[in-house]
Amino acid sequence: MATLPSNRAVRAGTAPAAHTGGVHDAWEGGERQGPQWRRLLTAAVAVAVATVLGWAALQSGDGLTVQTDRNPVAGPTDEPDVVLQAPQRAGDRWLCANSFPVRAFDTGLFYPPEHPAVPEFTLRPEACFLDSMWAQSAGYDIAPTPPDVAKVGSLYLVPSLAPSESACADVARVVGFAVPCPGRLPAPGRGASCLNGCLFWGEATDPGAVIEQRGFAQPVDWCERCASRDTHVVFAAVRDRSPAELVTCGPDMAAAVRTAAPLGGYYDCPPGPPWLPGLAGYPHERHTLLLWEAGDITYAVSMEGHAAEIRSLLRALRAGMKLVGPPA
Image (cartoon, rainbow, N blue to C red; front, side):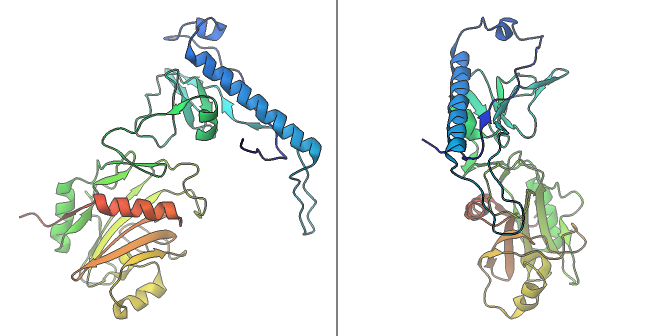
């Protein structure tokens, strides 16, 4: 049995809000029978057991936090954690709070926020959970991965919606070599459209290519060693290692890159000059960077944060990308 933090008790959130329209009133009155009530009962039992374990630990005095500095010594608190809430209605939509992002339905399935097939917001969830672990404890199963989606750890890679291959070909026409066009990206799979270029000149005469994706949902447990919760994926390519900003971690690496041996492998990039798309900075700063070379072309793919899971993701992104050359 998993041990809960001994200085915290656990309880459920508030009761579900009343609602009408498209949902039978018997749901609120408790008359509807079926497996969804067994799951909710299971959730209540799980929370009750967790509460008993937490209070037992409080009584035994285990798990007290003792600090050795001059700050006050932290002891147990009787403030319980909330692990589930009812969905809230907003017009014809049912929403879960950002702090309770896992949506569980009467189908017996739950959907973490990064799942690529989360039902429409017009469908009312049974409950909103703190994380996937609590939804599983309540008797729900994680929704299956769609057939055209690859799952890497707890992150989903879907077929890329943008940029298109024709947009990548336009970028390749300007730079004069094949550019890394994403075949898969984290859901929802929409990177930069490249209608405004996806190009960067730096101080060199010849430009390099840089294709980005931002704003995708990241699992709560995805990267414990990430410096931030930013979501940023970058594909880049240059000829003759220039502009060096696009395939290096920062100024120190950029200064050494021209005399270095063939580039390749993973790099944990430290903080550096912030990236201003198309203008200045280093797009891979604070990222895990994967580099490789093909002839005189250097390719890079990176993601925000440093963790083994991110290296697995980068391998999958590289395997799924397409090298798109200039249009004939």
